[in-house]
Length: 348
Image (cartoon, rainbow, N blue to C red):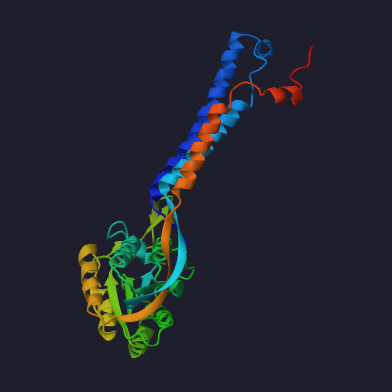
């Protein structure tokens, strides 16, 4: 298992293509300057020991050394030991609405990004709980099975978007039914489902049945509302620029509204609470308090331990290449000159 401690230093790798472009432009400039100075063939005869390829070799050595230094700054760590540890926690599943209505921008930057931020902040405040993620629109899709790997959860969370499911609409019952299959521990007494949505539900008739079945299985359902009750249009964007607004079959602009009534009803029937997600810090703090009041179940989890720094290998390799670069001179090597690989010693 590999951990990257300071990923921000990877941005320094963008200097490599810049240096390559500068080097190429410098070579063109040198060639033009030489042409103005005199005949190129005559200049080659005056400097027979000058190597054409050594300057490129020196650049390659320098760029590889720079890349190794950057990786060294990132400080990769390798887990050298896999051990089983005892942890206590609650099984939590997040069901995030990815229907098109979640693109409405009545809450910055839009409902979907707000929902993703809420989930991410909740994960940041968890201790030893197991989590899973579901994406749903007209159907539900398992995004991440129940796990203790919070880093993986955040990675999958950030990749979620409204185009990941082809069938559009909002069927909360699908999310609840899929979530019921996530809880793989029969002895876990506290099973929690968080539904993050604007409350638009196109399958209201079957949602009550799904909630009832979930509560019978010991699942508590919390709902988090994102959006405004006054509503907002759904922008259709291309390359980040709004091209138009979504319209219905009559050509009227669709206004999507936060339906708190449905979310409150689901939470009440699911032995949970409805939480307004407008204020992220307040919502997360309230959820944290709710989870802390629940009984924790002990379970076993395998995880890598004894992570060891590996930066020294990359820094050492970089300094070795820089050291070798000192001994790579611009003139040709004697034994290569004797081989005359490029027929440079031919007399005319």
